[in-house]
Image 1 (cartoon, one colour):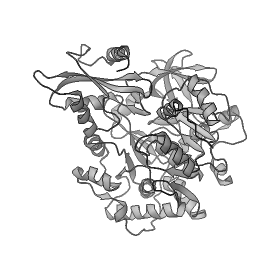
Image 2 (cartoon, helix red, strand yellow; image 1 turned 180 degrees about the horizontal axis):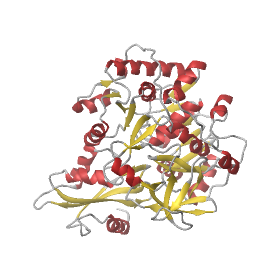
Image 3 (cartoon, one colour; image 1 turned 90 degrees about the horizontal axis):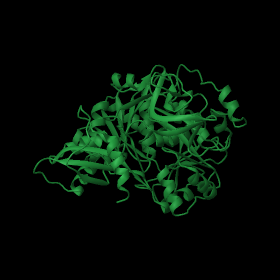
Image 4 (cartoon, helix red, strand yellow; image 1 turned 90 degrees about the vertical axis):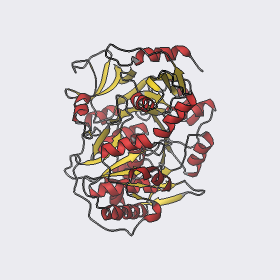
Length: 523
């Protein structure tokens, strides 16, 4: 797979310091993501495998030529609907060739794709569709039914037209390509707008996290959904760009037998496993044979997990760090240096990471983890939200909201400044859940926090004050959230209380609720 190495951002015969010190972002005035991940390969080696479709009983290889044709079919439908450059195209699909093709079609036209999660429900879909102003959607029959209330034209696999052959739009690295919504950690979910240069910005960190991705026989898979930046830009698109087959598999929830089957049938060599998946494998004392690299991100794993992983997989688990606004900025890399438990790793080449104080000056002690402007994977802005875009920056630094410090060149994660809940690999914002519960006729006020949990890291816990004379059970409220937001972010525990700790301005003091939840222990 020499072509993979030729496309890789990192040299495979250098040490970390050399890669860091000699790295330079490519200078390009014109780039289109559709060409990077599909069309350039289809023009030269159309028979090369792009995706291994494992959703059925037998693996089905999907070539770059076939993926291009599928994307051309989607593009023909989009054009027939009047979609033009800059228009938003919603993509409500799980791992599948059509999911990849929908994004590629939008990008080729100069339109903007908007990935949506299949576990979203009415309110979650409504807020993102309204904010993005999506004109059309690409989905499956299940998704079409979910989108029916929004009177949106929806393309499904059964209605694909004949493909066309239009030239790709002339786009620059800074031209908009995709809106990926955050989890709503500080208010309503915000749409991080990324340009056509975003993929190149992800590659150094992705390659590090997989011990220099692009080796012979590399094949990628993750149980993470392709609707999130972790599945889409940490696995699918880097794999397509590098010419590494990416496995598409349907897994509604992570379970060990299914994971082992997918890795066996797909000949998987490189996996991105969220921490919860790793904990489930560890609890069952089950490794995955035949892997060359294991990457994980979202929270520190700790020395015990890293030791177990080294024995179970035969390779070091490489932890990486980033967020929707600026992803894959730091990583461990067992091929380059020894991981340090509790640390995120080291900055990916091309990224300047700072630990800064309230004034934006770098500090030798604990501070806010921030990334210098100009990083390749940095968002262009929050979609239609200049106020929140400005708040995200402190001088020339994009502030992540996490706290950290440096240790001998390693970045140690200390904690979260905001109130994000990390549960089963998902980053969940409490504000959206609180807003949903507050719309219930029986709820007067509510506070939502993360409660420590041995398996999921945290579970969502809601403290609810009911209106005078109103009645509601925990099951009623859980079902209410499940139906309107998603099946992964509903409160797994609900406590009915007389009142909540409040500031003088009427804001819930989540810090006090978190302390209360931590003191309660396991249910």
